[in-house]
Every structure is written in structure tokens, then in C-alpha cells.
Length: 269
Image 1 (tube, rainbow, N blue to C red):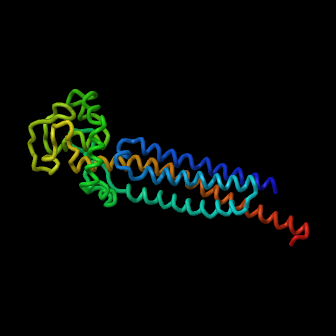
Image 2: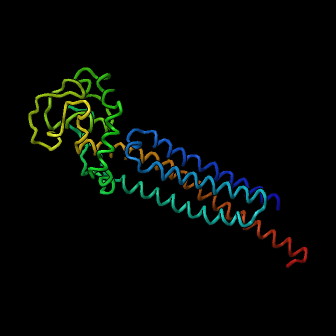
Image 3: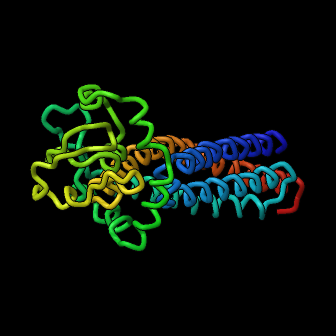
């Protein structure tokens, strides 16, 4: 019996360790500039990871001190949390399956269009009261000023692999035909009627293209890339958790079976 309890305890300890990548993925998202401004995914991931840690700890304590009701609590609640994690993994994949950058003539960096992305993601940034807060957060960062320090010549900038959010927010869309002075200062528009974003562009370093749809699209492209990375971590952890959970169920069943045999041999059953 002690051997089986030790096995259940070891399995629950592994479940505790598996909560760490989930919490870590949420913390990593929270440290990224775009995610810290949008504040959509990181807290659900962190909270789910913490709940799994607490429930796995309860299962570990239940197996170590042989508290059956605590083990049953662990099995029921952990199953619910695994279902929630699986739902989150599927949800992230579904909302990030659409959207990609577009090539522009003479440019290495890509251009981004808001309509390419899922409706759910667009709703997170299209409402003015939501975007005003996000825009203020983005404009307070150094992501655009860093481009001025790194690229001094037009061709160097055109050949640069800048991030989607920098492409969308820090410069006007290429189709507008602005002339490069530096990455965040452009003059002489040739075709301002090509896109509404052409009229939104401002050389004011606090404005730039933060009100443009291209900025919203660049933000979503950044989110997509980071969410996909987090989703891979969550998926791997989910598979491992399912395996650990099934092992825990088998160990718990074996422990209960052994306990019944022991009671039978002692004449209690």
C-alpha cells in the first residue's frame, strides 16, 4: 500500500511541475510589450497554471498523508482544469489561424491588413475606447525610437526585418508613397488616397501611425506570433498532463483495490 501511495504522490508531484510551464508561458506573455498593452491572454493562462499547481499540491498532500477525499478532489478538479486547458489550446489556435503579412515592392519587411485577422481578434482592437488605451500604452514604449537609432539610410531600413508592430505603427504604409527621411519621419506623400491610413500618418513622434488600421493589424500579427509560441508550450504540457492524470487514475484505482483486498483478508469485508 505504501508503495502505491508513493507512486501516486510522485505522479502528483510531476503534475505540480507541469504547472510551471503554464505559469511561465503566462508570465512571458505579460512581459511582451504588445501583450502587456492588450491584456487578453496572459492572466487566464497564469490563473489556470496557478489553479493546476494548487490542485496538484492537494493531490500530493492527499497521497502523502493518505487522505482519500483529497485525492478524489484532485481527480475531479484536475479533470476540469485539463478540459479548460484543452479548450484554451483549441481557442488560441482558432483565433490565430488567419492573418499574415504582405510583401511590398522594394521592401524586406511586410505590410499588414486588419481584415486578414479573425473577427474575435479585430473586436479586441477596433472599438475606440479599447484602442485608445492600447495606443497610449504602445506610444509610451521605445519600439519606434529604436528604429531611428538603428537605421540611418533608406535602403538599410527597406532591407530591415522589423517586427509587425513596428511595420504597422512606426511608419506609413508603403502604398502611400511617402519619402523616407528616417524610420519615423516621412515627407511628400504621392498617393494619400490609396488608403485611409495615408491620411492618418503624422510625423509627430507621439502620433505616427498609432491611429492607423495598419498599426492594429501589426499588433494582431505580433500577438498571433507570440500566442502561437505560447500555444505550443500549452499543447505539450496538456499532453503530458493527460498522461500524468491517467497514470494517477490507475494508481489511485490500484490503491483502492489493494485496500479492499487488505480489508477482505482481515475480515472487514
